[in-house]
Image (cartoon, rainbow, N blue to C red; front, side):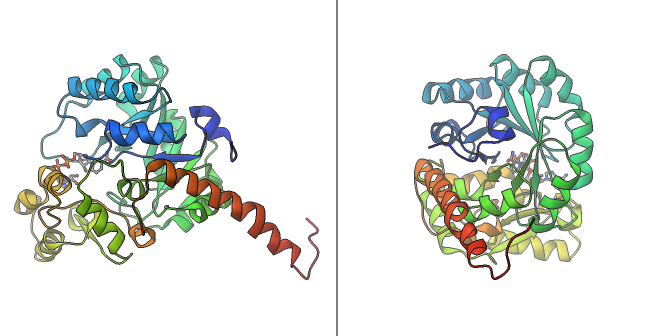
Length: 333
Ligand code: NAD
């Protein structure tokens, strides 16, 4: 049953207003195709692939698993080895990808190529001013990421309850609410705040199809909302990660004034990747949001999406009208 159709679902040709945004080492064909087949919008993470050619192959692999729309995430943030962004961009354009999620810095240098190729762009950012600037540049939608989120929340520390309505009040293009979403209650709340959908990372990481070790999923189920650390605060490249031996050591070293060079080996993405592969949870840093406190199981992607939609319908159809029906005061507006 289709419902909650809106500008966002129509613009991107999807059934449900739910997005699985970029996740380094996780956004691979297995997960993205499952999200697409469940009627939501998934993104392959470009930089998870070692080369632009490997990205092209991953896109083809995903197409073999779904005939529904999916996109590619291109994140431009500080990296230990700067990747050839323009080559990744050209690879996804050559593979006829029509939806891109940009994140990190302003997507200015890539937008002209995307536009010329008819690619729709969702820009993910963590402040209203950056969202407005991306809207002026001509992106098609904004994914606004609150302080609760996994990975890079920016430096303003504004939680979604404030950031989402602050953004939807000023933007004209569709806004997707990101950071802290895991269930139908969150979806309805996001819609009430003026967004037209939700983006989820950690919740999709904890599904059957997510290509990560079972121990990672078990840890998310077990952990509560307090078990994250903010690293790179002192470097103004803040990142929210699962609290573990490495994150604790990094926070301690930063307190003592460590430079990036002094923590580089601890925080490298290659070590984080090993956590996902081997299930050794203390081997490196791995991104997770506060929302892990709301995650209690490891469903299939389809079960998850259907559950969120049915819970959201139930709230809108039963719980919210019930509030009006029991009101002692008649509604006049
Ligand atoms: P990496 O191994 O290059 O770096 C590890 C971490 O250190 C990253 O968080 C990175 O931002 C940070 N970092 C690197 N150089 C830095 C510097 N000079 N100063 C401050 N911080 C620095 O990263 P990776 O795991 O190979 O990931 C590649 C890129 O993708 C990184 O920029 C990462 O932040 C980003 N990323 C993307 C997603 C996504 O969803 N697309 C998710 C998480 C991270």
